[in-house]
Amino acid sequence: MILGYYLDRLNFLIVKINSALVIGFLLSFSIGFAQNGADSFDCSQITSKPDRYTDEITFKTKADEPISFVKIKSKDSSFYYLRIAVKGAGAALGDGFTLLLDNGEKVIKEDEEISIRVLPGAAGKVKPYEYSAFVELTDADVALLSQHSIVSAKLYIYESDFKNTQPYMQSLKCLTQK
Image: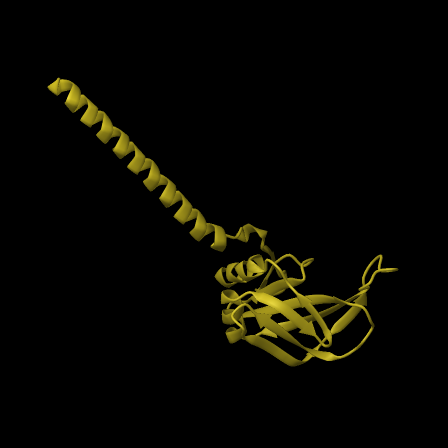
């Protein structure tokens, strides 16, 4: 009888220990996933091309996205550029753009030239034009855009909201590490 009691207690303890181990594993896995899932980005998506005539290397994010970045790195310095594009309905010309960030801050570039092009296959589309800006970023811009996502942009008079801009922010972080 006493042996049965101790075997039951031992079995109970084994079940508790196994349960605690499983719970601990699941918690560590979910915490690790939450930390890595939000901040993970495949930096191998960044392309690089050395210049044959200079010591510069150009690093680029995907150019076919509405938000893309370029880094030109030389021996002594690095320069960062942002390309941002929105679609619009009319062919209006003007300068300047504003970016709204997820923390409420704004990046304003009032004198930057806005380019316009007709989108391929645009006949009959509601927004057949693309407005874009290509601008050099300051160190402060790079720091800010590495920490906060662009949620909306206004290029001249055309506005666009962006969803899931974490990958763009992460791609800029990758560029800063190159």
